[in-house]
Length: 142
Image (cartoon, rainbow, N blue to C red; front, side):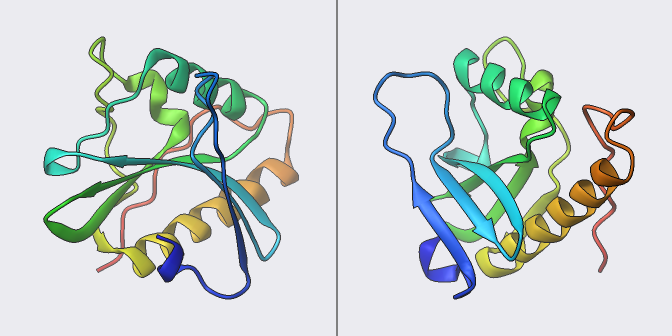
């Protein structure tokens, strides 16, 4: 992921040993601040621990922007989910929501994630009291 970030993006790797569910990376990118949980698994599956789901939901409730980036060891493609969709994680922790980005290369996936974060930030700034916890993900353009 780090190699795919543009020069105007500041990434901070979070070393969290207390297990509170805090995501792995914080990104500040041209005025957009997001948290990203990194997952690697078979078929790009995103499994969240209960603490991780709870953290993402608390952050979303407060207007924070979080994402879950899922990679697969044998594929250069990634999936990105909104952290606010953590409520849709099943009892086994599998994130079942439709992916915001489904099968893009890392640079393209990060660009689409940033565009989504900018759009959500603008919506929340325009009307912070009525900003819904979960927004419908836009349909990816071809």
